[in-house]
Amino acid sequence: MRAGVDDGDLHITLRFLGDVDIATANEVHAMLEEARPRAPIEIVLDALATFGGDKPRAVYAAVAASAELDDLHAEHERIARHARLEPEPRKFTPHVTLARLGRGIGAESVAHYMSQTGIFSRFGFTAMRVALFSARASRGGGPYVVEAAFPFVLGED
Image (cartoon, rainbow, N blue to C red; front, side, top):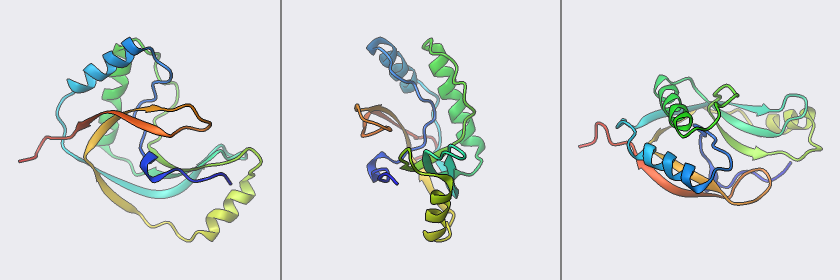
């Protein structure tokens, strides 16, 4: 297996933008600043899974269904579309990537590894913000840099 994701790079991707020019990045940033106020969102990680089927490429913690998170994702998709980005073709599968796997890793090896790590216990936390990330050039994502953060403020005193 390849190395796990650094703690500081753990996140839930709401909308992947890809390589965009500075004008598009600035437009997305401005629209995120104007996004409607939100209350913090309760997030529950409820299972371990893999992407890639018979040729797994990542181990992730699945995020339990959440109407608030789905609504936030939809807002970010609308923002991206307003910035003239193509629609995201993949179904939104909220997750936290825990490890990226090397090419030679088979499904049996991953299943064995996951069985050795013990039972995954549901884990909850409160998301307090959305961040706009950029990724530095590397294979497989990260390291990530927070370009801007947008705190959830609704309901705060």
